[in-house]
Every structure is written in C-alpha cells, then in structure tokens.
Amino acid sequence: MTFSPVSHHQDGALYINPQALANALPYFEYINGTLYFDGVSTHTLKEIYGTPLYAYSQRALLANYQSYTDAFDAIDHQICYAVKANSNLAILKTLAKAGAGFDIVSKGELARVLQVTDAKKVVYSGVGKTADDIEYALKADIHCFNVEAISELDTINEVAGRQNQIARISLRINPDVDAKTHPYISTGMKDNKFGISHEQAVAAYMYAHNLPNLKIVGIDCHIGSQLLDTDGFSDALDKLIELIDTLTDKGIKLQHIDLGGGLGVRYIDENPVSVNQVATVLLPRLKQLGLKLYLEPGRSLVANAGVLLTTVDVLKPTEFKNFAIVDASMSELIRPALYESQMAIIPAKLSRDTAKTWDVVGTVCESSDFLGKDRILSLQVGDTLVITGAGAYGFSMACNYNTRPRPCEVMVNHGTHRLIRKREALDDLWKDELI
Ligand SMILES: *Cc1c(COP(=O)(O)O)cnc(C)c1O
Image (cartoon, rainbow, N blue to C red):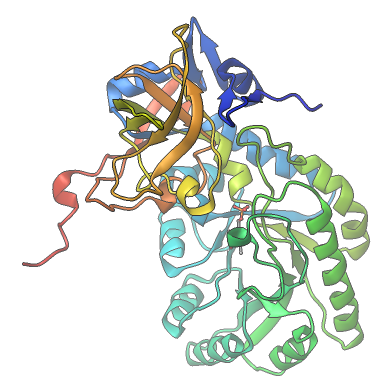
C-alpha cells in the first residue's frame, strides 16, 4: 500500500491533504470540518487550555505499546520505553501500568521514573555516567547498566564495591551497521561516540567477567532512530549473535539481548515497517537464541500519539515569501530546525478559501526557527494549526529560549481530556535566578 496524503507542486511547495492525513493516522478525525483527536475537538482543547499546547492520546499510546507486546508475544520479552522521547510523568505512569520498563539516559530520567514506579525494569544507557549517577542507580536497584566504555566498568565496579552491591551490566555494542537515517540520529556506525566497538567487545566482556562486583547479564545495541526498514535491526542482530557465540565459547553466559529502539514512524508520507514486520524478521533467530529480548522504543510509542496545537498570530506576505507567524517556535518544537525534519501541519478547521504557499515560522530570533517551509495552506489570522507526530522529541526537547514559557500538556482519552502539565508562568522562568 503506497497511499500518500501528499502532493508536491511545481514550485516545490508541499500540499498535505488534511483529511487523508487524518485517515492515515489513528485517532484523528474531521467531524463537520473540525479536527478531533482521540474523540476531543481541537477547538475545545484550544478554548480550555490555550495555545501552544501539546496533547497526547492515551489510547494511541497504549495501542502502540500493545503492538510491541503482541508482536513479540512468542518469546520472553520486556519493552523498556525510552524516556527521553517524552518524559511527562503521566506518560510514564500510563506505560508503567501497562507493564513497560524504562530505558533511561540520565539520573534525572531515573528520578522521574521513580515518581511513578520502582526501578526493577530500568535499563540505564548513556555514554558518560558519573560515579554519582551510578551510585544513585545502584541505590534504586535498577535492572541493568548498559555500559558504553571500558572505563565505565571500573567505575561501576568501584561504586558497587563501596556500596556492597553487585551491579548487573550489559555491554552496549556498536555493531557498525548503517541505519540509513539522518546523521544526527545515527548511533551505530564506527565513527559514532556510542557503545563499545565490535572488535573490542570480547576483550571488554572478559575484563568485566573478572571484576568482582559486576554480574554480566546482557548485551545491547541501539543503532539509530527513525529507521524505516528492517535491515538495520537484522544486521545488528547478526553481529550480536556472532559475539554471543564467541562469548559462550569463552564461558560467558548471558540472560538477555537488548536490540535498542529506533523504529520509525510516519510523519507525512514515510512508510516505515510495522513492529510486526520487524518481529517477523527477527523472531526465528531470537527463538533459536533463547535469551530474553529487551527493546527500547521511544519515538514509535509516542510520536503519533501526540500533537502540538498552535495559533496563527500574524500573516506576512512578502515579495519573495509568505510567512505565517505562529505562537509555537523552535523553542517548543526543535525537530524541524535541528534535523530538518518535515512534520505535517494541518488546519484544525477545514477551509475552502484559496490556498497560498506559506513558511510556518515562530517568533524566535533565528532564521532556523521554522516549523514547516513552503506549505500550501489557506490561512487567516487566529486560525489554529495542528502539528502531528509531535508526541516524541517535542516537549522533551523544548526550552525557554527567547524567554518563552513552555507549553502545557494535556492527556486526551476517548473523548475526555485532563491537564498533565501546567503551562509555565512568567515567574517560573527566573525563579532560580539570583540578582
Ligand atoms: C534514544 C534512544 C532510544 C529510543 O530511540 P527511538 O528512536 O526514540 O525509538 C533507545 N535506546 C537508546 C540507548 C537511546 O539513546
């Protein structure tokens, strides 16, 4: 199926058919011309909470999680949600209740997880863990450290010894496979900073094996993000299996294999493989391996469970370009500026007025402050626009640049809505500052 809601015009401008896009994404629907998200009118959301506003569908989130547990049902597995994609406590709580564990990359993320559940199912990735981070994680009794450097083994061993604990560890292997994604989100090639090279892996395991306060439990990798096909996962699995065989020969026995996250999503007209397709490709080898499977999905659980609502404040046609200036910006949603990612922008209310080509931009003083370029839209001041796919790496990357309060966040669920984070107030912005 190669259905696409998109057409490109001669001048390179992008037209996204809003109804077709809504039909392609679960829990979006135009009713009498107004966009509903998981049964809640976007008009209602704006009236009650104002804009800019992030909204997440609890149903979509749980459905995405369920697609993983269903796909890998045939083997023992644990899905560990990558907290950095969206770390709101209500999102974490929803997933914890459904049975998810968590993949964390900082002490702060662990502290968040501890607000909603315990650390039993936490795996801790990250290239630069300090002794202080490790002490905190050991006290919380996380499931496992995903170790990214040999010196980290020494630090964990030392801290664990001091605390009279045995630290469970896995080594994050850099399998040197091409994830075929944007270079900023590719993490599994040999020139990336992440993981321990395939060549050094066996020596690193032997080293870990001899450290008294460590217990080797697994092997892991994470090759990148927004992967659209199964090749990267499949190649990485092959590389890891090769290593596991060598380790077995050397008397090192593992309990789990963790293939990381990275599965891509449809933002506009991408056609990523489904979790089921990934499972179909990997399961025969995983069954034969007999180890518990860990996965660390972030984006694929939350991206399309979230939207950013924004209001058009100023329309500024110029000789060269038409600018639609909205109340969201790169401070609230940095993906277009940081990765040149294209996100769908559709109207909250369908319009029959003539359309023009607009750059949808924020008010931040940077020319990279755009949310979408050359978009064919019919716009009036006061209109609400909906940016889909904004549930992942949206709010979690938001900042206060240009002294902008961060937006509020709302959970919608089957026609209901509730605030899950207040809009920042102006005086929140300097509350930690000293004159
Ligand atoms: C970011 C990250 C993930 C999640 O990646 P997604 O593309 O959001 O699925 C998983 N594991 C590690 C180690 C990460 O750094």
